[in-house]
Image (cartoon, rainbow over all chains, first blue to last red; front, side):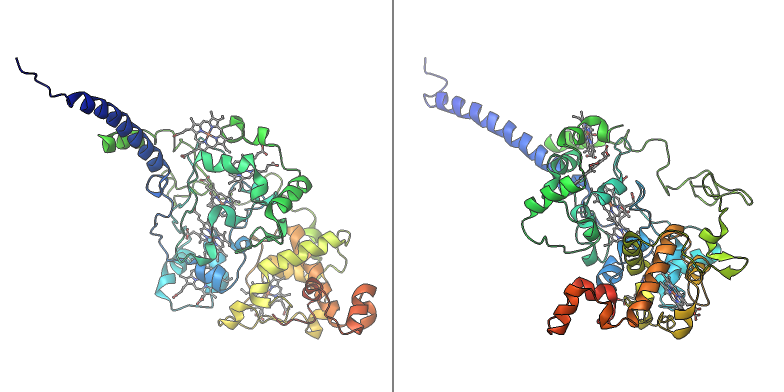
Length: 219
Length: 199
């Protein structure tokens, strides 16, 4: 009786076993990659706002400080999105004719709130607080990127747990002097790690142990 | 199958992501104006928001602007004032207080110059009053600048005004030597005094 399998079948069998393992590994790896991809984390996604508000114009062009509009970023967990009244501080007199600003004028007249769409949104089981970060020398730019170059707001960080932890383990990689917190395009004067370590001491930043314990962010 | 797995994985993530509570400024479908943060009823005062000290909160007593700062004048207060001034006032009044900020250059009404003789002579409480209630075409800064910061800004405006009448004798020794030998004083100092740069 002739053999059903040729001799090479042994090799094929071994090869396909390895192949299967490889395929599984590849699959796992792509799932991990996909988990971190912009597609899943919604980073860089474009959000259609009711008004085409441009940070490029207001921050990059005119040089307004973040805190002019995001008034509570230093005192509270929430950074605050500006009220219609704040827009009208300036737009009561400039760009009066602009059709882009019609919703602002409408809102000011009727008292109805403007309905901005959230760009960044952590799950509700995570506790985040702006004031602690800003007061300990973490710049807006570190988490939100070059806002001054954004015609439309984008999320640049993944906002995943590993992103928070990367910094909480070694904040000295990112710390800057408090006075520079809202500055865009900040370049450290010297070695970042050295400055970071000094600031970490000066601002009495908590140790990595505390900062990475689950109850810091899940409370 | 891979795609299916990932989809399934992604789909079951959302249940705990939006807990049944309101985040700040989140939309409500319960109230007609959709605000989850409710405005105060008329005639009520939120805890901790009672404005009993008239001078501190309005800059005025019996309708007259206060002359004295209601807190000690310290370097920290002036530093705070400078920072707040640059955030909230410089868009219109400029960093040196001449009234030539970016917004004015874009067509806003000419903002007052703090070096105007009338404003140089005015009581310090007047600035606090203008920030609290606005003045003419100038919007009020009641919601953006906290009462204590209004005083810090007022003190800084006074410092800006005084810097205009400063003489060489007012410059501290170290910097004066640099001036006299023709060197440029440190960038931060000239910024602070506002006497050399015009933005």
